[in-house]
Image (cartoon, rainbow, N blue to C red):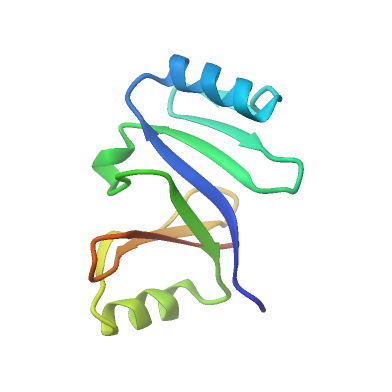
Length: 114
């Protein structure tokens, strides 16, 4: 499978303000609107998520999440290439697993597997 970016998550401190800004930017209302996560979808199917206190999860800025076939193998490969795990692989519901790795420059790499 070709790896692709399927989501971009943004850490936010003020969910209401961020939601208003992204509603204006994307021109659509959120598909999911909860105190712990707000989810938009672009016209080309990319998920845009707002994560309150996302900094505590290792999100420092807008973070792309790459869809991969084997998330454990991808985390291992990135760590072997010098990265460090910022958030271990875990299920976020519906069988979808995510992880966050920091590369050697400190950039955040999100991984997702459905």
